[in-house]
Length: 105
Image (cartoon, rainbow, N blue to C red; front, side):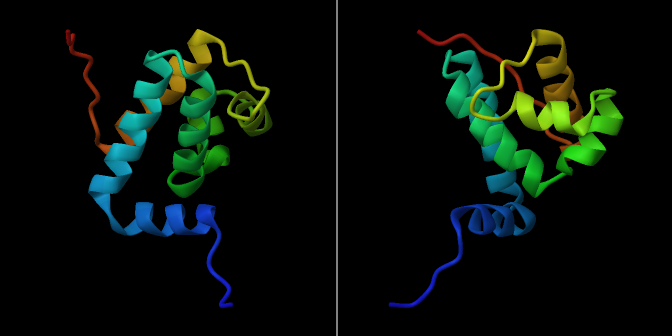
């Protein structure tokens, strides 16, 4: 049986080469949070951050220590609204993606 790349490596490679996938990943992460699925949203955003800006750069931009950000997006992390919204705002600016909320019935 041939060895395959890890899921994280595959996601990171696709994020780097596919702008539509990158935008969809950010959108899906935020949408999961808005739908109350904190665990999925944090996981998706953690993967997005690792594949794009990285936690060091994100920490500099948001004035939150990188280790705190890593914990915040980890399995037992509990991000506060200020930090979470600051991160989402920076990710939008750094990617050139503008997310909008619209009501659906």
